[in-house]
Length: 363
Image (cartoon, rainbow, N blue to C red; front, side, top):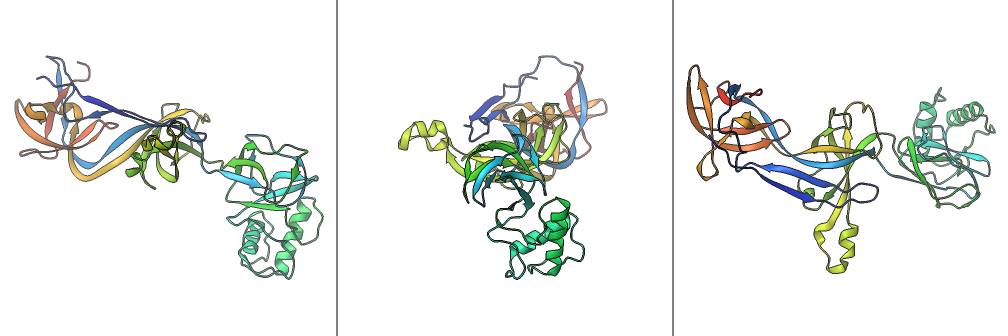
């Protein structure tokens, strides 16, 4: 029973900012079946009813989620920066100006004023109080937008613990707020440079492993926030994940080289994939395989792809095995999951639990 050869297609993607080029790997087009030997031993597999997802294979790189710019909030001489690759956590120093440490605190709003008794209410006060509590200095402190005597006391306890001058106030430029821990990825300034408010001192990412992709404008039609993926890591193990961020679309270097009349299909967007579970054997910038879900059908009949036999006009059939007898059943195909090796099928006389003929693994 012969099968025609499968058609293999591919989509080339250009890389962007710190991300290796993303190339959509060759995938199977299932209109035609794969070639098979003229004679091969057979076995059986069950027809199952389940959810099936069709996936697109793409290439990504291991890295870290998020991109942060650490800006100066005070003026002076830069006297120290952490080395590239260092992880700065809440309460640690981001850099030093005039020998005074600028401490990292977590929050989404940058500092813009001194923290002192009598200041007006604000979300910056709430951010500060939340950090003082999480650092272990929040005894009697209510985390809200009001600077109270409890806030003043908490600041003093913190200053005493880190051997800073105990004042109960925090001048602008002493702390910096960023959303999470920062893994330093580069420096804009070196010690000895003059720091001014707003000037970029260093760059960083979060310390959360992630997979980075560069998606074409065509792929953005089916790569969305929360799109599910399966990632094969360098150690061969797989991790489930999902798309957690999509950046703005930008023209790649290839597209820019063609000028204003260039190929608009060269535009790409940075895509971040968050992973479930711990990532062992992490290798920064290592290439990984990513299977991105394009479509999902629930509660459908599925068979191993190897059970499909191509017939005339690009159609398929399966051989149903019933004891010692067999019968050919024409089927219509739906989604194909190349990662799992299964295909969605439907056909008269085909039911869950039926046995279909497949090539024997040791044949």
